[in-house]
Amino acid sequence: MKHVIETSRLYLRELNQADYSSLAAIVQDEQTMYAYEGPFSDAETQAWLDKNILRYKQDGFGLWAVILRESGAMIGMAGLTWQSIEQATVLEIGYLLNRRYWGMGFAIEAAKACKEYAFSVLEANEVYSIIRDTNIASMNVAIRNGMLVRGRFVKQYRGVSMPHLVFSAKRTT
Ligand SMILES: CC(C)(COP(=O)(O)OP(=O)(O)OC[C@H]1O[C@@H](n2cnc3c(N)ncnc32)[C@H](O)[C@@H]1OP(=O)(O)O)[C@@H](O)C(=O)NCCC(=O)NCCS
Image 1: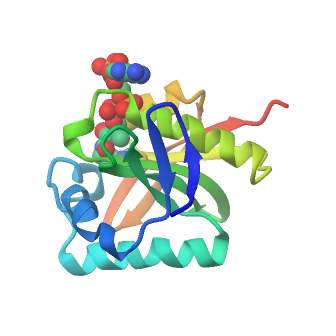
Image 2: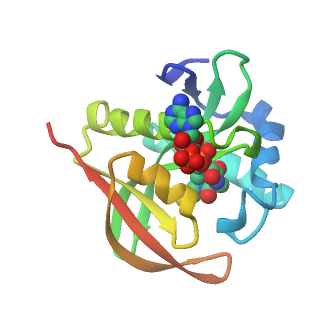
C-alpha cells in the first residue's frame, strides 16, 4: 500500500479493514480515550474506520495509519480531516497513539509531517488542532508543532458539552 507520508522513523498509509484490531487496541483503551469520554464500542470502532475510509474517497485524505518502520507495527493514527468550529470548517491535524508508544516523540514526528503535507501538498494556508481543555499531552504536541492558541469553544460530543481550545499554525512561505 502506498505510503502517503514518510518520516525518519514512521510512515503513514491509508487505513483498511485489516487494521481493525490495531485500531481497536487504541480506541477501546479507557486511558487513551479519556478525552473522548471513554472507550469506543465495537460498533463505534467500525464506524470510525468506515468514516476515515470514506474520507479518503471524498476528500483525498483522512486519519491515516501510523506505522513504525523498523517493525511494521501500526502504532496509531494521524492525519488531516475537515472539522467544524462553530460556523467555520477548518483543516485539522489529529493524532492518537497506542499507549505503549507514548513519550517517544512519535506523535510530534507524525504531526509535523502532517503540517508539512497540508502546506505543501494541499496548499492550505492554515492548519488547526482542536483539543479538549483537559488534554495536556495533545496540547503539548500542538505547541511542539509550532501552533498557537487562537480561541476556545464548546463542542458537543457523545452527549457531553466539552470546552475545547483551538490551536493553529499559519503557512509562512
Ligand atoms: C496525544 C498523544 C498522541 C501524545 O503522545 P505523546 O507520546 O505524549 O507525544 P509524543 O509522541 O510527541 O512524545 C512526546 C514526548 O516524547 C519525548 N521524546 C522521546 N524521544 C523523542 C524524540 N525522538 N523526539 C521528540 N520527542 C521525544 C519528548 O520529550 C516528550 O516527552 P515529555 O512530554 O515528557 O517532554 C497521546 O497522548 C495520545 O494518543 N492520547 C490519546 C488520544 C488523544 O487524546 N489524541 C488527541 C486528541 S486532540
